[in-house]
Length: 218
Image (cartoon, rainbow, N blue to C red; front, side, top):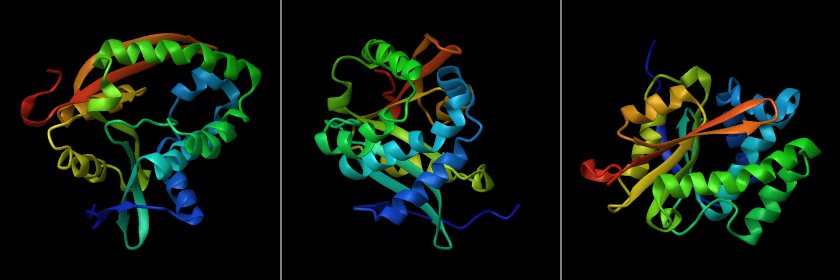
């Protein structure tokens, strides 16, 4: 297979059309994510796109949106929050991204997510420490369109920020085992693993950390 030529850039103040394009890429990239089913059951397919659009919108308001483009088409998306910021930490993010998503949840899913939130907060503190959001970059979401996977595009998107951290570490969580193995290949260290009850099974999550110059997890 011929390698795809692509460029990476940050998108600032995206248009509505760009928001939709980035959402399309992430939705396609996560189409095989079975972990959604443990939380949402048969409703998972309906929520797949809204669950991907919300972080894109939030990232456009309070984070950093990076894309990989090939021949004018977005083929990879990466959403970051810099030290001192996190997803849904501002009124504009909550109004434009979180609240429209919450309105789509069925009562059972809404209850579960409400119960899960403090557990995940404790899990992150146990894994990274109390000051995570202030002293580390956070990789909120990354996805590459299936047709373009396996060509180093995801790695390039992550390394774009690795070169801009100014000594800061990068934290992330993943709910897919294959992704944890991929991040480990890029130098991320596993800092914790959590397993939580969900309406249709167990919700599994792994916390990871990357530090420049071999400072991972230190």
